[in-house]
Length: 312
Image 1 (cartoon, one colour):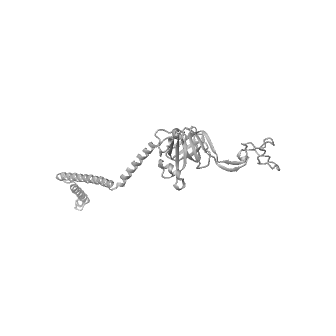
Image 2 (cartoon, one colour):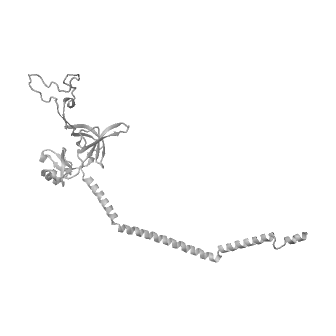
Image 3 (tube, helix red, strand yellow):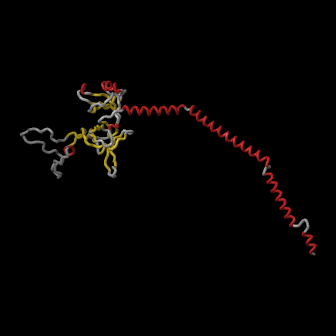
């Protein structure tokens, strides 16, 4: 029985032989795959040369693309002359701005228009009121000297106005200064004319600087015909019933001896719309690009009132 079992185990269909055969087959397959993947030593040099050629061809194509891109950019720049013209126009504008700034002159006074009030804060955080004045570009229309006019001054014109709204005398007077149209305002600044002043030159807003003390003059608000209590701050009569003199003026003079009212008596009349001047007003800030001057405190007049700003 033992011998028969041994013979059965040695039979060709035994599991031991099968496992050995499968191992041999797997090893043969792996060796064949490696041999297929790995080229022979002779072919390795050929493959390396081919890869080098591929890399060099790729580099050539990339360099050609870059050169073509640069050519396209240069062609675009050549085909777009508008960009060059825009740059030239910007350069010319800058040059004209610089030339105009050099041609501007500085005077002892400026004219502006009242805009509105605002609040500023100093370094310590304390607030104070401020009035904004809009500077209107003004041009020299006439130069007055002591030899001709017996006094020295610089006449300035600003705020253009249509010819049909101006007289022929004003149009003829402003032509030598280069005005194509008339001007709404023509004012004088009493000072000795600076050197090199010519008709038509623009007055610079930099004539005033931060920290300067100026004298401001303008027309106050018009309030019409008012009584003595509003116009002169009178106390008025009795407020009790039946006095009949609540807001009346009262006595305006003596008896028969003078027989008249002395001039200068405070009485009802037109109130406001008079020239009011404030002196020693500090300039808080000057915005030359926007054409705005900030002055400390209030300024007489309503909005858009012409204001004279004169250095002290």
